[in-house]
Amino acid sequence: MIYIERNVNGDIQNIEFAPGPNLEEISMHDPKLKEFIEHAPNSEEIIQMVLNRLDLDMVRVIEDVIDIMIDKNLMLFTDLPDPVQNKILFKKTIRNLSNNTSILEEEELINF
Image 1 (cartoon, rainbow, N blue to C red):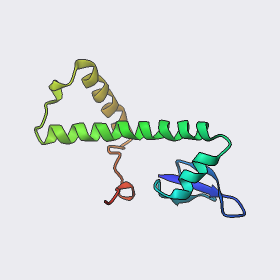
Image 2 (cartoon, rainbow, N blue to C red; image 1 turned 90 degrees about the horizontal axis):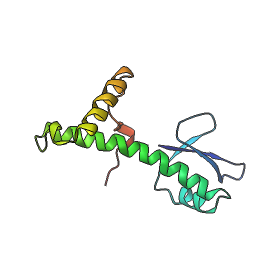
Image 3 (cartoon, one colour; image 1 turned 90 degrees about the vertical axis):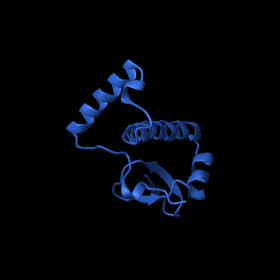
Image 4 (cartoon, rainbow, N blue to C red; image 1 turned 180 degrees about the horizontal axis):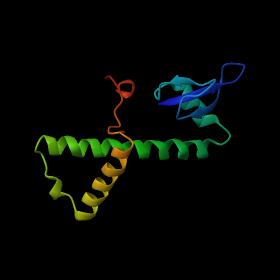
């Protein structure tokens, strides 16, 4: 999710990726968010920050897709190259330490 901070005129002045004081949740599809990113003085920096965050989230999505494919017998875990298997197993071990097992949270589901 993306959270925004507004100035006294109600315009977006900052974006964050976690809730906090004086922040409100905004849809990633909101045209005002796109407008803010395009016209901000540090637009390129903001674009890179957003892309980096989305890339991290996509890694979790891909891991979940791999799990689904394995659960549905569409692929075997051993079909993956050894280095990939090792990374996935290590990440699952570390992630289980924090009990954070899936990227998909109810409020993040997109309805089409």
